[in-house]
Amino acid sequence: MKTDCSIYMEDISLSYSTTSGFLHVIDRVDLSIQNKELVCLVGRSGCGKTSLLTMLSGLLEPTRGIVKIMGNHPSCARNEMKIGYVTQEDSLLPWRTVRQNVELPLTVGMSKRVYAGNISLKDCLVEEMISSVRLEGFEEYYPYQLSGGMKQRLALARSLVYKPEILFLDESFANLDEVSRRTMQSLILDLRDRLGITILMVTHDISEAMTLADRVVIFSGMPSSVVGELDLTKVDMDSRKIRNLQEEDEIFDQILSLMESRS
Amino acid sequence: MKVVGSYKVFIPPLILIGLLLLGWESAVRIWEIPSYIMPTPSGVVAICISESALLFSQNLYTLTEALLGLILGSSVAFGVGVIASRYMFVERAVMPVAILVKVTPILAIAPLFAIWFGFGLLPKVFIVSVVTFFPVLINTILGLRSVDAPSMLVFRTMGVSEFEILIHLRIPYSLPYLFSALKISLPLSIIGAVVGEWFSSDKGLGSLIMVAHGNLDTHMLFGAIFYLAFTGILLMAGLSLLEKKFMFWHSSTKTY
Image 1 (cartoon, each protein chain N blue to C red):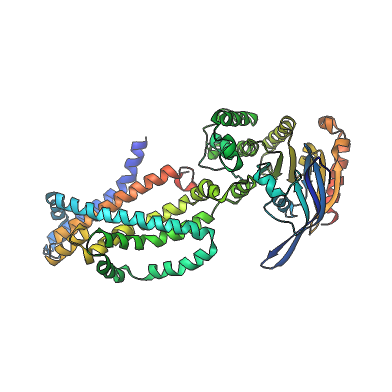
Image 2: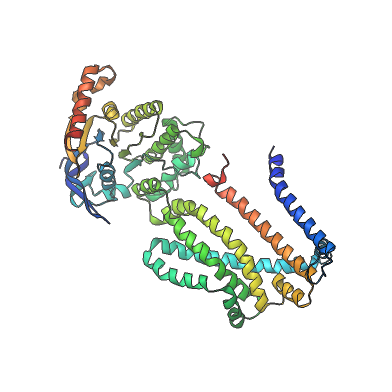
């Protein structure tokens, strides 16, 4: 196992026991993600992408194989608040203001002990994170008073305020309009560079994966497994905006054909 | 603008109540119904004013029984609900007993409470607790389990303890269920207190109703009923205010 891996999976399989029988969801996945890498896991809806994230968060045990987060069992990383998670659906607490939502992770779990005696540091972190996601001026607003894009930015701020080392994005931009989606994408790239966190994003949107990822991992089949990988750092990813259209189309088609290969 | 809005809300029920009272007053006078069978509303109002000190003090006693019983019953139900929502075997153990108590008519249990606990405040408080327990228990269990799934996922990913999840997620998300339970339990608490007084009290509006009934004093009987109804309305209005205050974020409290 490589020591600089943030996320390491070896021969991972996952099965559920359901009322209608045994469901084999993930089959023998090997995947490792380096520190500060931004990986997009692309696959069709219902192929087990969220199950994989749940497993990596230590909330679900694999049927077989090894999962390591920062070299430890995922539950250790979870208890040490090293994981941030942004869901597709609204996960904000509607009775808390923007500020109170962002502040919440600093008042629970391990953070509670760390920040209990340091209110000024806590306030400073909250202000900084609200500003990072461009929600200044909305601190006293409630989630129901915000737009969909603002809510997702708030969810992102809440997931990053306690300085996790890994961020899981579970189709987090799927419900957003195009403008909000682009805002979120640029925000993610900006925060990744500034905070130096490892990001694993699951999505069914190939274009989004191409825009954001250092590496695209294609997940397909039932049970799902990794059917291909594309290292976009080698494909002129430093100048994504000026990459020629023909090259972009070729990558898109390549990912799509891999997604369809075992469907 | 807000005052005009509230004014509009109160006008329709006030008109209806006014028409009903007018019809009642007219019917009694036209058909010359004896007052021991049916008093006139004006006679009832007169008694409510002339005997206001008596009615008010007796009402206060009944209200105390009702509220103490409601607090006791709801608190125990909430505590049991918290444990039952966490441990399925506790729910399985508690539910048959709770259902048994619920389906047994309170009129059948009330005399027993008088034998066991005497004629003071206690038997009435216990009767009210019994009648208010079940709605709060059921709604607590359901409410604490009805946490928004994405919020729960995010919380669990942060390594938050079960107690913190209870405080920050489960209880706030159960508020709509708890307020629904209280809307059922609050009127039940007044009914429970009155029923309790019928069997074991010389105080309270329930007791006053029994005395008035024995004397064929329908004016006093209706006066006591009006005081009870008015108290119930005030309590429900207070509960609605609390609901709006604590559930301002919930779609049920918003008007679109």
